[in-house]
Length: 196
Image (cartoon, rainbow, N blue to C red; front, top):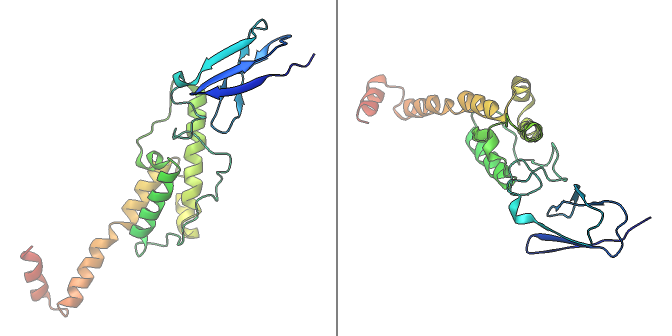
């Protein structure tokens, strides 16, 4: 026997109304895009209310860093310029940080969101998000850089490796600029650096 249910929300509360309930009513949470997560409710229920405000940190909440939108994929984040080396590292890094923060995934490269050890479902979700962030990074670096980070396990480790490799080069660039400014005279360059 088929049953028709009317489902609606009022102030984060999911309400279900049915005039004919024959077996079990499968219902639990409606996410922001109205997909159902099922749990069993007794068959003698005719009006059921489920308070959604008491479900913190749901992976169906788009504000949760473990949430992956159905339209997100490895090519979702595409920067104007791929990372090629120290020449464009700072601008690439800032662009990537902005893109990751719009997806609420900046915590993965910062290393501030730990993988759950208590909840296997959250651990799996963390793995999926971490791998998505790795894919976004790899799709926005040159082929040679992508090959060098391919087997790194977390996005945070990749982020640190890239920072160590390409952020340090700015020091040698400053030295070269100072050297050219001083006309290659070592005594003059030493005088400028000792005054700092």
